[in-house]
Length: 156
Image (cartoon, rainbow, N blue to C red; front, side):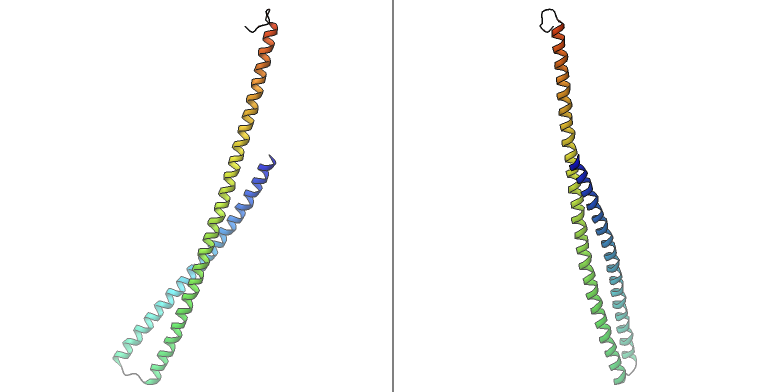
């Protein structure tokens, strides 16, 4: 019984760890979604910026200062997009790791649960065998008492 108590304590510990892993996964997933949304916004803004300036360049003459300003801002925007993609990739890696950690923890919970079930089944089987032995011994004693009461001393 002490072993089962210890296993139940272990199961509670593993379940708490699993719950913590799930909470961590949800936090990481939220950060990933934010990083993806920001990357999409930056990419959309970059596309809009390029389209707006392409239209401007095709319709009107542009002086060198305006062109340099466009290129400079375009370069900074490209750096921001690249940096955000890097942040998104890191968030994806963290999410993948957190998901693997959760799966590993769920596997541990399942293994401990299965071990508890096996130990309980073994304990029930052992108790059933002890009960059967007691019943057999009681039946033997009853049969033995019956032979003492029989006049010939033999079983009827």
